Length: 306
Ligand SMILES: NC(=O)c1ccc[n+]([C@@H]2O[C@H](COP(=O)([O-])OP(=O)(O)OC[C@H]3O[C@@H](n4cnc5c(N)ncnc54)[C@H](O)[C@@H]3O)[C@@H](O)[C@H]2O)c1
Image (tube, rainbow, N blue to C red; front, side, top):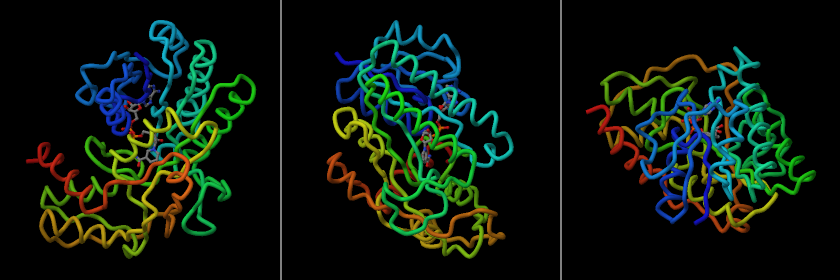
């Protein structure tokens, strides 16, 4: 049986990837230091290692598990934190990733799949953003994710380690915690459940591309076998305004009024992906429309808040 080592497998996206892999017959080993992840997210049928990705002992785990594939989803994902402490951000996201790449090289891993982000593009020069769009990160988080992409490509050129880079738009769904990137949906849901006014920064006309976590997990599984040494946008290709998102949630949870706050500095106005390349080469397309994804997400949060 083929083993996949998933970093960040106790986190939001990583744990959903782990569940999907196990249900498809893969053996799974999880590496996570539980900094933002949670033991409740970790599938009992996986082998769990509470280890930091920057720890040089990581290679020992590779020796024990002998993974065929690595899915690298562990990261410092808080944009504001990256601006306050770029050294910490770079240490986890760049140095931690190089450590993983070194372990992959030494253990003869066949392929690594990397969770990258729309933040590598910076302010969009055009919409829908395709994979050829210039890379001009405007945060240290975007920069650390971008530089890791480059390390992955150089490791591939030098040592033949195959890779697929998946750049996600705003991911939402069950197990999302409250400190990450793209967390507007769970933030709205939390305020609505508490009977408080959710905050909208700016006029709410900003748009985003919201992708449901099951679709992201499926893209990772497909990338084990397809899209070698290539980069793919993983989003819906559909732009949704924050105010429309707010109204859609209100229709399911119950109407409420938002609290308008000043626009956040550096907030991008519009963002959505072109996903043509992913549909053609990975044979992937999103299965969840926003309404369905929101319903499933709310069902899950109900268990926590009610
Ligand atoms: N959530 C989004 O909308 C989004 C969008 C684009 C890209 N991404 C990327 O997807 C990946 C997963 O993000 P997420 O939303 O699931 O975040 P998350 O915080 O829920 O998951 C990250 C996991 O990594 C673990 N981790 C963090 N630092 C670690 C370290 N030094 N050593 C070992 N484990 C460590 C955390 O404990 C957590 O379980 C990240 O690489 C992120 O950059 C997320």
